[in-house]
Length: 142
Ligand SMILES: [Zn+2]
Ligand SMILES: [Zn+2]
Image 1: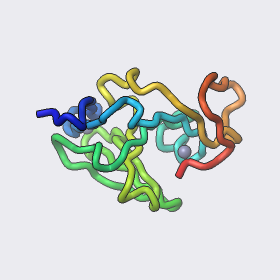
Image 2: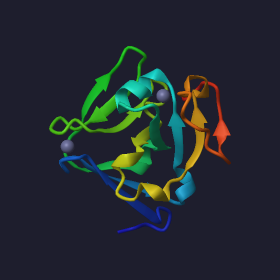
Image 3: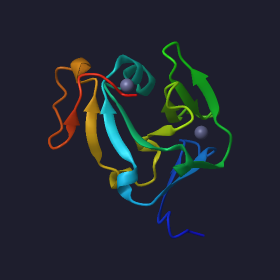
């Protein structure tokens, strides 16, 4: 049952549905969606930027399946499905016990969490326009 303090439930899943998770938010503003143009995100997402929604770790919970984890040299850990390979969430060393950066596109209704900013804009691809009305940082996604 929904508690009064966690009024919004969002569901997400990997490509093959083995990993399923929920976000429990008090308000949609509890999630901070950002683009990140850094090279680590670029490679992991296989795209010109990464797109994640940052939530407190206690707001994120797996409902089904067990994620596999991989930590890369820069200390970023990504959790993913060992069947279909889809990334579900990521976090740096310092964020590991505090936050989860959830891969935006794995949510069932990602449009509910609109972007609030962009990180590592210094690595933005030339053909990628800036989003309007959000913050822009040259580096720094902690
Ligand atoms: Zn899967
Ligand atoms: Zn990044």
